[in-house]
Length: 370
Image 1: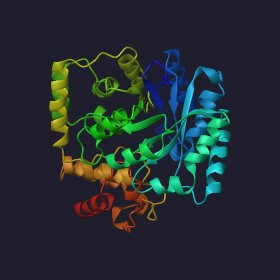
Image 2 (image 1 turned 60 degrees about the vertical axis):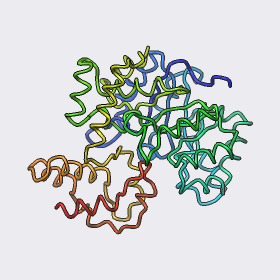
Image 3 (image 1 turned 180 degrees about the vertical axis):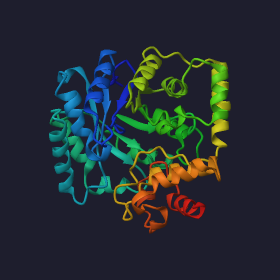
Image 4 (image 1 turned 120 degrees about the vertical axis):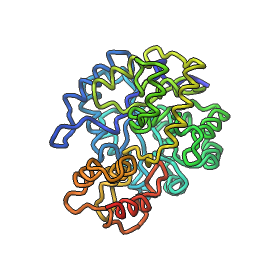
């Protein structure tokens, strides 16, 4: 199969953009991050219709498309399932993405977050057929999908859509044997079909860059100078078939660390792999809920809850029960009456969660804690 990806593996994920104190995107810093990324010879940018509350594609236009020759970078974006009510919405959404980004064409185009709940919607509204037509017309170069479902559904999707040229999977050392995420099984299926892989959530929304102290100490003892994030990136970079490792960088320190890690990645030594396995086991024994802060659960919540923040409060309570820090965290994140008791248990959040978290139960637990 033709190698459709650049040789350098680090990709710039544009889901969690830098923001100013007023909550607006910090375009100055974003431009600086783009410049540093491009200056280091990396070219793969990943956005989506829904990222950063719908503003990411517009930010890409300002920070990248309007400032660099079109053939100097590759851009990936995604068709959202949750805004589609009819087949006509597919063409309208794609046209809006073209207008938002001003890119002229998308190097990589994906069905977004395919899972067991939304798979049929992509089929029903002809999303694959539409994307294939856009590819024939030159507005899409390569077609694939990002995936958050079961291994069985991944197999079904690949069997049903041989037009898929790549797949984007959640792979990281914490989820490798997870019965919810099934990273290893999904990786094996993708490779059995010969598909190249783009890795999302290699640092699990930042969780693997901010480990509990016991897990962090294991890695620190093995390599005192290495950052926690660098361990996570090196782990996935050497997996078979991995062509791009996405990282959501919203600070220059993150950018510099990731560039240093993946500019010329060193495979993990046997000793380092053993240390990482011990750290993973320690992490998985933690009582925290593995929320990555993607915010897919927030849009459409009838109670207007900031669910990732509330899960953060719960994790704080679990780690530091009965402490002043946990109480202060509760007060800070439940302003304007946005308390978990307002949850109506509609299930919208759980259907949107790519981590398959039992959000309703977590909010009930938090309500009881306070």
